[in-house]
Image: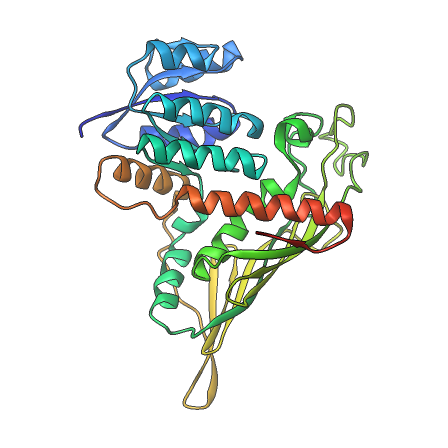
Length: 350
């Protein structure tokens, strides 16, 4: 397969800062058209990436353009609708996370991809961190033994995105930091644990900073607009192999500093990943040892690596390490945590 013609649907911040550079950096990708109801945003993207094809309605773009794939970077609620429409037209699909806002929509996407025989991949860029790639091989070698429990989270002291916009509007986003940040770290943990199937979850969710004033008077944050999602969520996941995972995600919380962390505990070794700093805790000759792998300091563009992996899969050069089935399980977990937060009871997954 030669050059892949990609149509972009959604030209907002995540496209400008992550998807756009990722597509443009691949020598066998051509951004053939862009679509966004915000005309100024769409025109700016078209100019930057050298296409004269600009649309306000993705349906018109799919009808008129000869595309091989689409890149979706819209508000969450539209991911499934657009992905299914593109797959039914025989196009490959790369989508920003989360996969969808509920399990039924995620399953629709997976089913459509299977029927079409096309690649459907949702952004999981943390899998492409050097530390994560190393850790995956280390675990698969058996060096950590049986991984039986872990904890992961992304806790911000103050970091509510787009207050009053679609991020904080449940009808558009599906939720707050759990669906925004949780997708990244839960996916990374479950992938490293060997992709066990979730069987039960319990959780809690809080909204305590919806009307909080800006912490910086020189950069005021508007308090108007919708804010009907959580700003902190915690939970506990049980898997079919007996393993468990504790989780915590917040946009605002009175903690010392922002933390993005993952800890896994195995029978032969444990690991701690904080940001991109990895530490292994093990025992050698009956002596407790901490091992700190060192990775090249050059900037690693994980979004770019994820998009390039998608292109390799479309071209038949690689097998996907991110499949629609993982996405269905992810959204089942998130939805069940929200349900548990509302009912106060553990939710069993079929």
